[in-house]
Image (cartoon, rainbow, N blue to C red; front, side, top):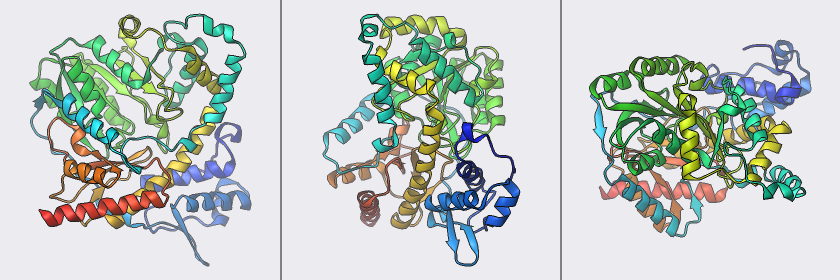
Length: 485
């Protein structure tokens, strides 16, 4: 464990920096369940911090559920039941299996419509944080400053996006080791539009696109809407897209044109691709002239900073898409992209499809970034999400039947839960709606029903009594389904 701490002006109070180091050690397994935390005296000597700083760091980790204090013995890494659950199983690497996604748009739309039209008291679907975790007041103040100069609203916004926002986004990209000029960025209506523009720029109807399996259902909808065929590539809950399986697919499918990938906090798995795998993926794409479409929407929520796939790109082959929707302001639908060699085509498609984004939301976020408020907000958001993930995992471990599996991700807003054999997420979805509970069934994340035995569970909400009651209800519904089998 390194003794060096960052400049407090850049990384927050010293106790938070110290807590961050040990939070990463716990997440990586360097400090395993039940192991003893270095004593307060050791922390003081190792990191050259005061007694108060060392105590605050330990108490912060204890409040997150990562440590437990034992009288006269010190702090220990929590053993919680969730840590005893076996991880979700790794995918089977078999021959390529092209899927045409015929009717998937209708199937997903039907599930979404049923969920939205049913009254629910608790929503375990989606992947979004509680409103209290977003800096709405600070953003509103920046918006008010713009409204004091209303003449700006009488001028059409720039086609590529508000200049100060693109400057702020370029600075923010440095955290993922991407060096991008502001003029290389295009502001979009969320990451969904960015992904749609990227796919339209690099493919023609009938082309094949490789996707992770399971994959975010929004990508599957875009593919079908654009008349594209999809090739599902096995994806690990721990290490993400299988580059080995993709290499086999490239050899077997000559019509493959692009790969859509979420290297950091994959949706729905929460996986992190190792840097070696990211570089291998880029090398494979270079060798076979494939476009890589990288979704980085969740990356800022990782417990430790992660490198973007595009940071290694020297040919303009990676189209990086991202969003403020999950990390800053769900109500703004504000995204951005850097399209490399396809930037001019994407710019033209954006103008033809939706024209520039409105100015107010862009200016609000630009002011927030310029004021240096984003790093502090993200640190606090990650700090508050960490115990919520652990508490939700503990609740699921306590209430769901034996045989449940999950891999606790190193960040993010959701858990990917493998249900015991014999359970159907689609049947649970309908049964839960009748109980006022909304779920995200695993069957939404693939063309076939290979993931019907999985659920994506939102853990962006605080674990209040209503959330715990909902998990108990889910456990009861699981047992009823097993009893009826």
